[in-house]
Length: 124
Image 1 (cartoon, rainbow, N blue to C red):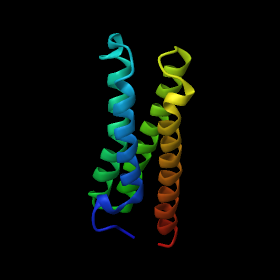
Image 2 (image 1 turned 90 degrees about the horizontal axis):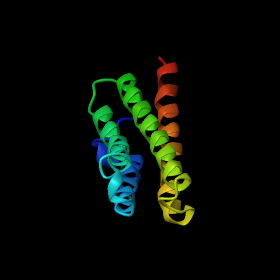
Image 3 (image 1 turned 60 degrees about the vertical axis):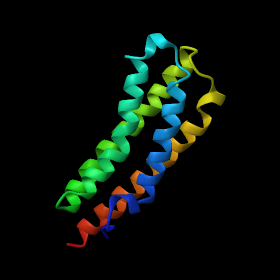
Image 4 (image 1 turned 90 degrees about the vertical axis):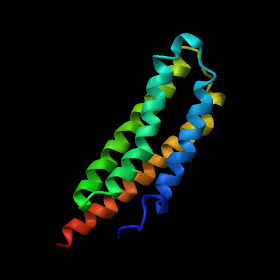
């Protein structure tokens, strides 16, 4: 079940794509948001692949699931921050479309991986 390296996981690769996209988007935010929303979005997005990597490096599947769950929480946090950007008028739906779609895809991939690992628990 375990990949040889966290970089082998498609969800980690997709989360890295999302990270790049968010870093591009935060450059569009007003300078007054540099230490507020921009910073929080960067923290949230970096947390996703970071927790996938850290979890994969742990000693058990249960620990891996715990870190994947944290990554999923960061993904939901990021979705919310993108919605805030739209609602306050910093970004448009068109601006965030690619990022939002990647965010949703990463969320689905995390859910699938969590389910797959958890189903292996039930076998034992």
